[in-house]
Length: 416
Figure 1 (cartoon, rainbow, N blue to C red):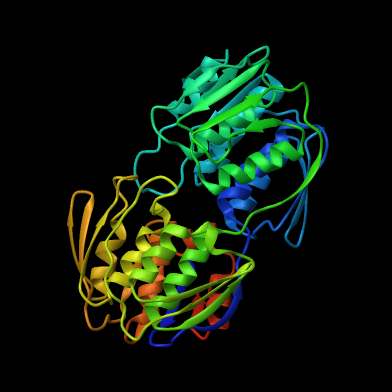
Figure 2 (figure 1 turned 60 degrees about the vertical axis):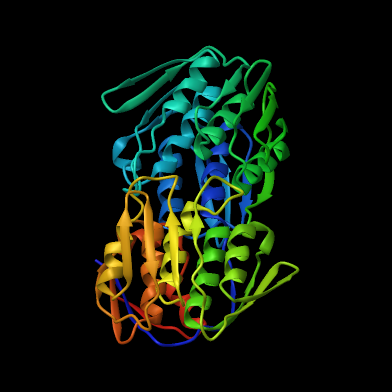
């Protein structure tokens, strides 16, 4: 099993390009199921989750050709609307095939998904929405089974803000009969990127990026070409890494508009951030100031950046309070940070972090994707060597992490 060996103490300097967004690419890949014509996607990141989803689509009868960061999908031969447990057990995003399959094929059998162990992420909102659109839906033997002659437009209200739920129902509604209105919809940029791709395929969608999305169903969608948006979580991770190490970096193929809430907190911490066209320049202070955060749905501070920001608070001047409101098990990295010498106390969904003069290298274990990134950032500033175990989590969501960090001057390498 691969591990990441980090020798701390190097300040990050230089320039690195940000990859396409995993959380945008996954639903957009699933959108190919809605059309019998080819969908061409560019800026698709080379990640384990992407490879897993492409394998899943291929076993459904979809032709998928990949060249560099370009993927061409042809679902004209779609003949097996099944997502088996063996292929989706590691990836929550696999549930995103449910809506497109029901809309296009009139049936689907999709295993309940897996993913990071960060708390309950039920699919009941997906099921509730499809049922309201006229589908017969049941959960049997660990699978969601859905069937309908044709979905019908409906007014849908999600009990909670759910990104994958919004995306699944929006895709399903594209081929439904009549108008569908999704209220309390997720507003994330990745939802907007999916909507932009669907519109390019002939869908009629308005309101993406707000909490009310309207979709007028059409008979069919056609092929299109779409470029996946930059990964805002990768962007934020490198910004936090540079801030923690007292470095100065320039990130290209991204923009501050994707990470406004994080930029505000980094400015409060003492960083200088200069937005450029399709780029971000950050210069860190000699000593960061601790900053409190509270995670919440977009446009508030993202839960996917909580672990990385906790890592920089560990070496900042002062104390900070971190409140996690999205997932109940998302402080598992705190115990690992404590192994490096961090001063963290946990009380329910709240972490109290007091900065220390220095962290010390140790062996730590990644528990989920973003926790892994937080541990890497801590390792970059710790004295001596830090060994991060279970980095298969990192490979799910960060493209060439050690290569990009090394290009910025970090002393990091993958070991078996």
